[in-house]
Length: 78
Image 1 (cartoon, rainbow, N blue to C red):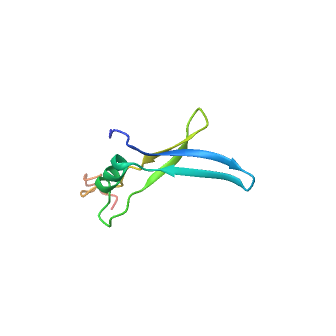
Image 2: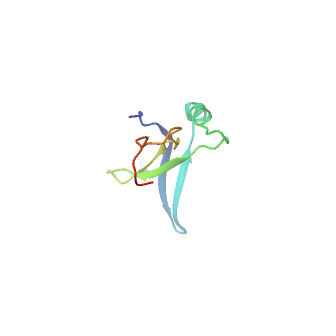
Image 3: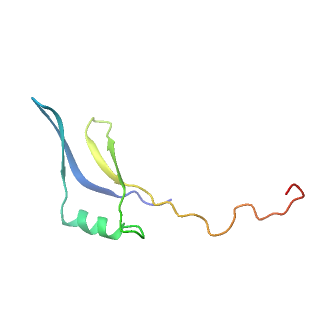
């Protein structure tokens, strides 16, 4: 299992216009985002709510299709 990677700092501020989620990124976050790019240059991360009610960003695991079929056994059904 891959180690989880977290990015940024998120704070929720309540204003008279509604809730605002403020995102802060530091130098290490930029390096992590650079390292986690997919083959098209994109990085996906999920914004999640913690048990304490705050938010955090977690780098989403990249889907990598298997190069070989999972069921290589031959049977008479096909």
